[in-house]
Image 1 (cartoon, rainbow, N blue to C red):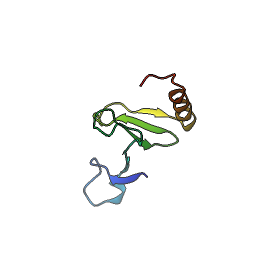
Image 2: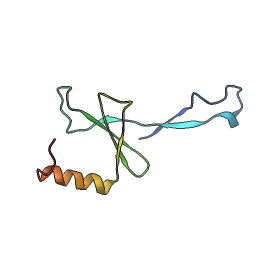
Image 3: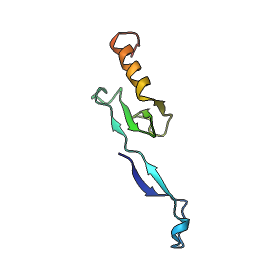
Length: 84
């Protein structure tokens, strides 16, 4: 679910035309992440893609996958073709 918030760069004069809303992504820990606090990834729905990031570095890079790419990645992991 995407929530919206007023941008910190929006005008403060009360003029609604100066207000800019931006999406605040709702990140959640992936259900298969390590629960001991070590190897965790977070996922969030983006516009037509799925964002994946390291939970220890939330300001770091975000990988984007289409649903088809994500399914292919899962298949490769299940087949043992990707070292985790």
